[in-house]
Image (cartoon, rainbow, N blue to C red; front, side, top):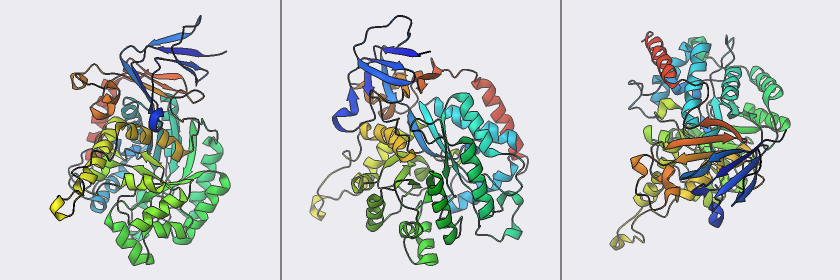
Length: 472
């Protein structure tokens, strides 16, 4: 039976496309069996569902390309709040990971997904690295179950490590590495059970050791890359988040982190890295020449003091740009609206920081031309779909999947906007979510998620924190 929905009277439509195609006048959109069938001034058809979007702004649903959902119960840890990346890893996520059981992990995943849904996010790529030998519960299964229950598209980036920087004998079981065979066998199991290669897939699996420099031996990286390509899945990891990556790559391999990735088959159109903050010009050129993508995580990079990724230079070099929120333990507001707001501001700040006065040879005053709201929407929607290979999520245009967020700007922070279409990104905050559709199906309606009691979820989160803190 055909499913038809008409969204009527949209004030503004931001498509997620580039240039003059970044906006379309609408004001109506018709969705047929989960696909955008028409955009324009449309007359209702008999029996079709209607959504009144008067005074609403339409965006493509956000695509979050890098997260660590289990960290949703690790926000604002006092022992890690003022630390940079390496000491923070020891102080917070590594310190707590052994205390997670299946119930706590499921709760953390649910909290993170709900937070993202309420920002208008329809697709999540979670870089889950909570795996160890003999683990008594299946974190992958939990993530897919929770995403399906909420109606989300979900990409599991199967993290983990086959080696560690510490002696294994000194580690608790929850920090011990897997064997290469064990890791690859589990990836194969997950691909066979969950992976859908279709361009509109609701489920995907990605090969994603936690970081190339530290999580696997160099020869193992080549094996992982070859196996991923044999199975037709993508590759993802962390890279060049801090200067520590540069120092380690030089000390261990005598080259840059990106050159090391290239030497071990970890660059290409089927690869994207989180962060890429610290790069030299040759690394940017190499990433662009190979079409390797980025998950830009501005709030986490700011929170940890890592810096601001050179997004404009990367895009000009040919790098596909996407946006990720990273884990909530290093980003206490892990949602796509605050993330895209930060991306808009930080790219301008980065360029402005480079300005010099004319008497010292300067040629410009500030950096407001570094990123437009339209750029940021494109990076956070169609850019994300591109790096994930979800080719049917190519923005709000006819023939594409109906992944649509409808925002109503009825909070005072949005009053007075001359261009309401930019409000959700430029204004920050969280506007009222009139509706969120994923594949044409409603997953949020009138700012509420069916079956989710936010007060109860908050109560359970407080109980969970008390449980986690007992071990301190």
